[in-house]
Image (tube, rainbow, N blue to C red):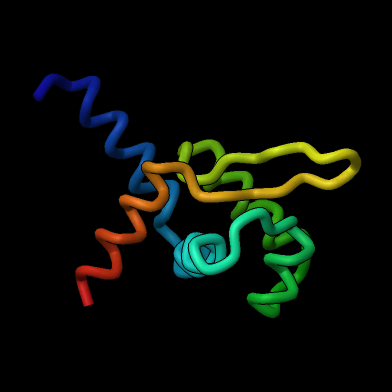
Length: 91
């Protein structure tokens, strides 16, 4: 592998390096197209926390955003689904 691959892997790992972000990935697997408000409600966290974690998941390309009018819906990317499957295989 070349060094570029290591940086990509680091970006992905940092993207899910939080129990809250893993919970968000799991929630999106169970229920695609959630808004940040939906995510906050499901996880029992405040909106700002959900928004920040979701932003980091999007930056890591584990989650994608889709704009529908005023609402922004989130769903797992294929990479996000693969990462979640890997994490679930650990335990």
